Image (tube, rainbow, N blue to C red; front, side, top):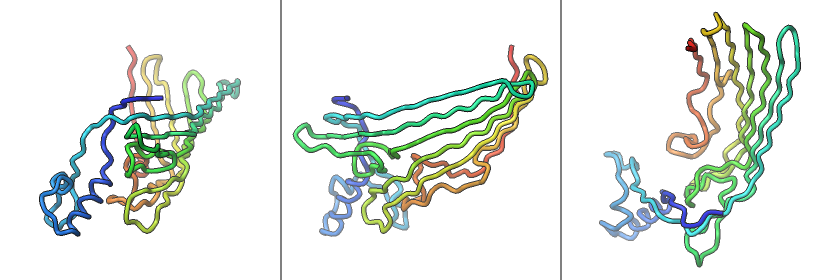
Length: 215
């Protein structure tokens, strides 16, 4: 339960108001002044202010489990975490109704993109010299509340990562990791960049090599 929470305005209502002002033949309105357009006429920036929300009520469930046992001169472990957002009710005006932000991009509210479910599952094995870890990440599908679009759905996404570490010595470790092994693109969404930048990573497969020294 939060009250008088400092949050940033949502851009979509300002964009909609500016469009309505344009259609009415107005110029220099407050909404129009807060929008910057490129030479082609597309929106390049919307000026947003921080305001106080009347209240936000949120509830959910976080689950975590881990199991390990000896295997092949090392230890194998399995882990799982899950986050369920059951409620995220936003009330800007103390006299007005609340708006649920669960399962939405919240472009028309004051929240952020908020899929209802997120989970991570992992399996790892390590001994005194080697370590190998595999992770699977899941984000449930949710709705795009952007005005004027033809498809309001954003699909769920599942990606997998893998990491291998080798202890060269007691203080030196060499590691190789691959994020998003299958090189999956972010779920398609009717945004300017064709994906939701708050909830998705557009980089695809990322390979990294690192060397760690402990002192």
